[in-house]
Image 1 (cartoon, protein in one colour):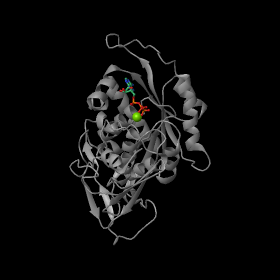
Image 2 (cartoon, protein in one colour):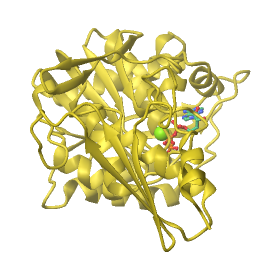
Image 3 (cartoon, helix red, strand yellow):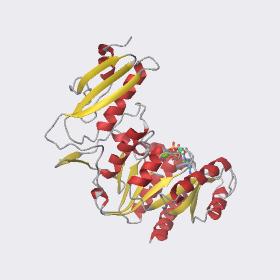
Image 4 (cartoon, helix red, strand yellow):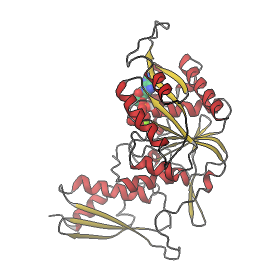
Length: 354
Ligand SMILES: Nc1ncnc2c1ncn2[C@@H]1O[C@H](COP(=O)(O)OP(=O)(O)OP(=O)(O)O)[C@@H](O)[C@H]1O
Ligand SMILES: [Mg+2]
């Protein structure tokens, strides 16, 4: 049977990224551990009224217990605010002040995973910046953040500051773009095992608590699928609309349909500014005129027609796009054909919006 000491030991695996990686126990943040008939209840005390890392730490504490406890153990993590002087409010109460000077907030979505949403988001952001727009990108993939790696900003820690009751996070700046990702607060090897509401709150913080300043575009790299987090996002963030990414493959296209419906259903009703057909064809470097339609031909084009969405562009499979992604130097920085393809995409999106 699990005892309090076991749980305390497991909680030492949870480090606070903003406190020199000291763990929850060392920091004296664990207020109480209760064990009762197969259920572990942990209470964590936070000093600040709105610790931007609260959701993250709660999720990580839960993950640490899941990793170590016998299967079937029920786990509850409670949080309390130690600074009682701060007025108590229910839930997460974030305004939209930080988005007041952002012109267009655009979700980059797809039904299916792995179609290149993050690649397109990062490159589109860089390309828009190259065109002279003020751009930010929020990585909303709280389960598998990829922006830190794709921009070689891993390991950097965004600054945070307290303003009255509010904790504000400063985005990182690189390649002329402001970046924010939950990946800056979590360790890459730490699986983010978060339940729906927790993930939704963390995500909202990554958008609403960030000092974006004046922006023409704030792109939101959405996680794959059409689950809770998407619904929460389309309801709580003042999205102007969406861009859908798909490959030409039939299965991917069936998922596109779900993605489209998510934005077009009555309660959401947000416009879709365009569809990007990614991995449209493969061109070997040594034969630049040849096109091989590995995932089928023009599936995205047909889908755009069927759903009456403008086709923003087709991006081929190019080895350098993946290599640049892995190296953290987005292909859109270059003036090679792949770089130019992303610039054309950016131009078209800006034109569709203006
Ligand atoms: N046009 C392309 N040419 C070559 N490689 C690509 C291209 N688009 C994406 N990739 C590669 O495919 C992989 C998946 O891309 P990416 O991570 O952008 O997809 P995603 O839709 O964001 O995935 P997830 O659903 O996991 O968030 C990455 O390794 C990326 O470098
Ligand atoms: Mg992604």
